[in-house]
Amino acid sequence: MKAVVCDSPHRIRLQDQPRPQRGQGEVLVKISRVGICGTDYHIYEGLHPFLEYPRVMGHELSAIIVDSDSSSNFKVGQLVVINPYLACGTCHACSLGKPNCCMKIQVLGVHRDGGMCEYLVLPESNVLTADGLSADAAACVEFLAIGAHAVRRSGMKLGAQVLVVGAGPIGLGAALFALIAGGNVTIMDRDDLRLELAGATAGIENTIVANEDADDQVLRATNDNGFDIVFDATGNRTSMERNFKYVAHGGSYVLVGLVKEAISFFDPDFHKREMTLLASRNATAQDFEHVISSIKLGKIPISKLITHRTSLDNASAMLPIWAHDKNGLIKAMIEIE
Ligand SMILES: [Zn+2]
Ligand SMILES: [Zn+2]
Image 1: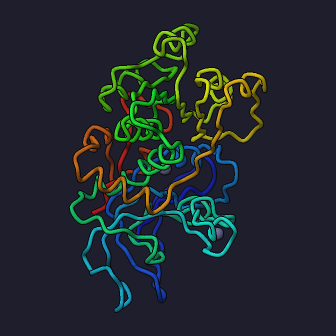
Image 2: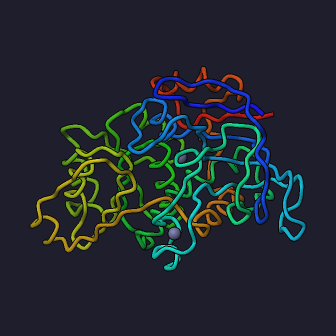
Image 3: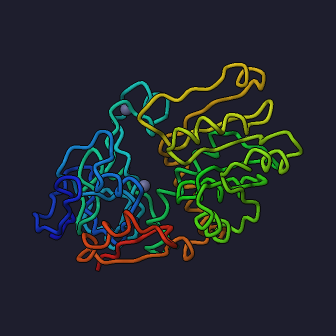
């Protein structure tokens, strides 16, 4: 079968490799769509903190069941969403029902080979039925689930004043699910074009460009109170540190993005607000289900989210271009025949 392999930073190519063999409790699937993620661009650029090359990338996947156990819940030919977080099932986090932060987590396309290929084998417990969804929509579930998980973590109340910082796909997902949860949502980004595109896509009119005027705009937008809940989806230290001051007294700050360095804050600012600080990592099956039902209810503008397309044959040529040229780009999708 064909697979797109990243051999080392800036070296990506299409190669032929054997089709994987299925074991008991596993399903063999044929990949339909692969969403290209910031993580994939980072792997290509050599910016991923703990990645061993060579690697078949791809973790935003929809697929068709080709083979499964006779006792399986899935039928051959059925469209599925893939949950790419393979958890150990026995560690402390898993025993608490938090496989998204499993101590031994293996993410497809990161810790082990992913779905930029024709066929993949994975545990049946990592596939979800996508009945009623298009192959495109099913491949958007994973990145949207990251935002849905962050919103669930925040415990958002109806009418909460919400700020999402970072207007990439993850921030956009957080904004969409904050809207669904009844939040009054504002998006912030330093790139005004990306901000405009995100706002138009999500139907959000409240936008703030992260420039020298941003602090004043936050105060004006919130009657000088700041936001009840702030999500950071930038993965940028300066932004992550700055956003502490945008949180209202009694409010929460959720770090969805991450950086491989220390971040700091001025403790009195944190303390006087009695602020809640949360990390949000990956997503669980519950979040995947919430995303799937929200798509079915027509609450997610899937066709606007997918702005670029390519094939498996052309992906190794296009991915390096999209790693730099983000003009009009929200989500690029690889279509596999
Ligand atoms: Zn992703
Ligand atoms: Zn575990």
